[in-house]
Image 1 (tube, rainbow, N blue to C red):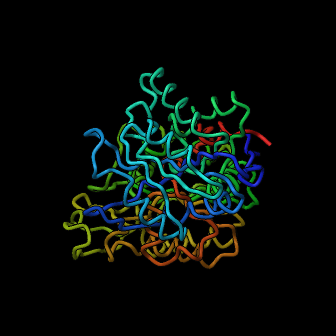
Image 2 (image 1 turned 135 degrees about the horizontal axis):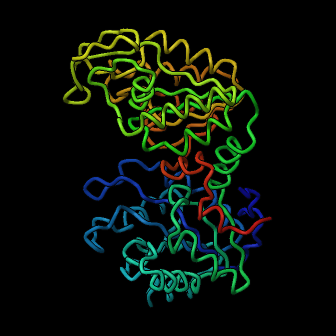
Image 3 (image 1 turned 30 degrees about the horizontal axis):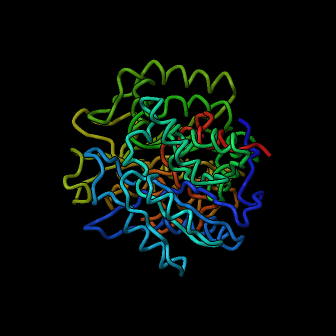
Amino acid sequence: MALNKKSVDDLNAKGRRVLVRCDFNVPLKNGEITDETRIVAALPTINKLINDGAKVILCSHLGKVKEGPNEKESLAPVAKRLSEKLGKEVNFVSDYNVTGADATKAVETMKEGDVVLLQNTRFRGEEETKPQKAGEAFAKELSELADDYVCDAFGSAHRAHASVAVVTKYITEKGGTNAVGYLMQKEIDFLGNAVENPVRPFVAILGGAKVADKLNVIDNLLEKADTLIIGGGMAFTFLKAQGNEIGKSLVDNEKIDYCKQMMEKASKLGKKLLLPVDTGIAAGFPDPIDGPVDVKYVDSNAIPADMEGLDIGPKTQELFADAVKTAKTVVWNGPMGVFENPTLAKGTIAVAKALAETDATTIIGGGDSAAACNQLGFADKMSHISTGGGASLEFLEGKELPGVYAADDK
């Protein structure tokens, strides 16, 4: 995986029109932004370009846009918040066509240091490049607004969309530069290099519900890591593959043979594969999810037939924490149990605490583990929390991400 990409620092941006693909896919409630993390994360790259005297044209998607273009998924609230954060007017082009006459006019009148935000890229169905020809046309229209391109949307980097990857082809054709922004660079430095070139011992921790979601991640990390820890719902399929009774716990019966293969692979490669030795069990899943639940702890090979495993137990918490203590690099993706419930968050808290207390480089691979770190108050103790769920998983699988791959090599 070639990870030495041109960054925003390599651009000579003064007086040039720079198209920046951001990730402004923020949660909205009644038209108000409820979490501005993604906006804040984009500011360093945007400010760098403003200070360099670029004409900064921002684009992003928001939501899934299943019903077609609509005001609920417009980027208007983002433009407003962005203006406040940057301390300057962001000129929002509300045209649902994204790259139409309004956008062209807005860009033509820009001065150095000005900022324009285009409408939600997914308002053009062609964003997702199906059919291919339409996606190419949209990418070309985007490129016509700019001289150079910066991708800073790691959360979308695993998708070969018009505004993420295809646009680079046309920027190259016109002699422009395709670079990555500071946010993308940080993801490459931490996540990409942790997997490709880790400081050892390297410990990887995987949790979450399903084995199926992480088949290639398990396979890839067994080759790269020294120790692979498996917790969360996915651990029960491994426990069943060992011949244990797992009661009503979550299981993926179709993946039992796969789990056996992975345990054999770990043994052949001389890698440690750690599974829970005890489990927090209850009569059923809490309803509501954060409601009261009666939990007992039993050995993982002794879960009663009428009970369900919902968290790792105290012995396992200690086992996993001990493995983390000796590490120099730790990557964690997926909670250890139903962390949304205070009684069942103990395992996830124990792992987060072990990561917070180690001197190792600690990398949280987006999604639920990032949410858990934020909710449980450990976020500021981690070296890096990824901004992309799907993208970080594909990085951990060792895949080439279109949004990273499309940037120019140094």
